[in-house]
Image 1 (cartoon, rainbow, N blue to C red):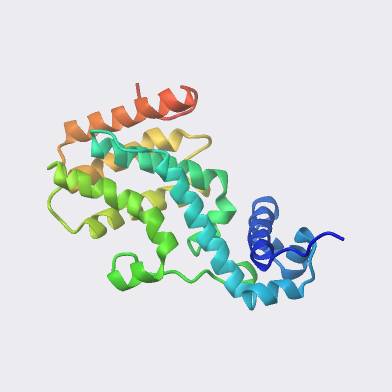
Image 2 (image 1 turned 90 degrees about the vertical axis):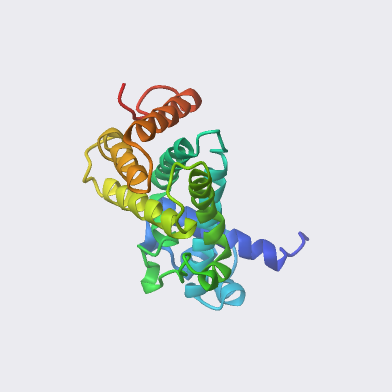
Length: 235
């Protein structure tokens, strides 16, 4: 007789199954019955481990933030913090493009079964304490912003507020691009995302020339890692 799965194993499997269902069939597929069938447990297991679908959606959102953080951690740091901001933006866009349904739930843009993820204000200390997984992802942008401030590229402003401005613009681009507003493929990167980043950097205190050089450095780094085809950046 095979051993009974531990509670933590079942809970993790339910979250992973929820992400698979989102990826494959969208938020309409996120139902207790389908989750249970996917994992091979009874429907009651969803309620035993989460208390209901609302808490499951929160767990999926937390998993999404952790996945996003793992993507952003791959960027690393260079001696050009503004180039790192551009690289983080490009990587963020790629992560969301690969799992749009997961990140729609993560950011509260999708509410499976009418259940929307519980989110917190990451610009306040109280909000950051309540949203550790979201903070882990956000801190990558905050750290690059802080380094740009320390290097004199950005004005000495509150790092969380400045990072929130960058994040807001980036997520707006990603959302609109996913809806098809910026054309097919990745042309929006050249025409919208990179110029937007330059405009924001200048608004935060950088010069146009330095911001453009940093954007070019980030594009070169991306191409070196991922190949030249379809990676964005004007030559």
